[in-house]
Image 1 (cartoon, rainbow, N blue to C red):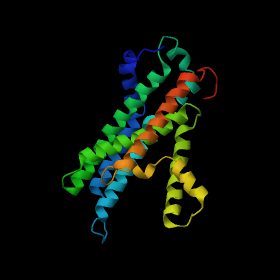
Image 2 (cartoon, helix red, strand yellow; image 1 turned 90 degrees about the vertical axis):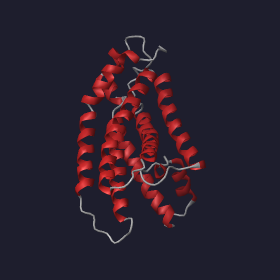
Image 3 (cartoon, rainbow, N blue to C red; image 1 turned 180 degrees about the vertical axis):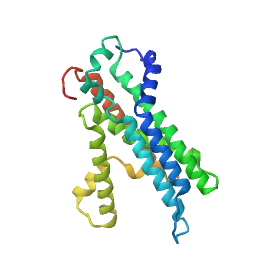
Image 4 (cartoon, rainbow, N blue to C red; image 1 turned 90 degrees about the horizontal axis):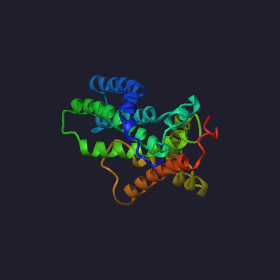
Length: 237
């Protein structure tokens, strides 16, 4: 059960393209049209840039959720695991490959939106930084959904709830409205979504290391659950 499931790659890519790939493409095209045509009225010097990159950031998060929702739980709820793993295929490697293909699809869709932003700004676009941030976002948010999908059915809903709670708590702590040690400790435990926005330069030093390690721990946790938890335990129904 240790072979890499490359023989499934073609079929898996087709399933991604015809499954989550379709709504991802629709979302990306709508967002690209929006950023190219929306009228932005602001007195702030960088107001337009902030709004356009905010749309890109929100769209990228939606694309990550679409690319990873039901990643594992969907197969187990439908009973597909009985057929998929009747052959000597490693479940962790199978779903890691599917997770990577979801990341590729999300990156292509996000590039369409980034192209719309670049066309609107009519200025050199920081493609390298945008791609790096998109990969970091997928590692953290996509890794979270992947892990949740191994233990519960409504994985993407739980991820959205965590995303909202982390954002609200960050605002409260940052503004001084929440000063308790519990609030600060909880903020440190939750995923560092503030470090994986698609705006500004990539985080560096300790912040980059923290985001990378956090995302890799989420990914390793998902693979560990798939490796050590009995597939027919019914816990993901």
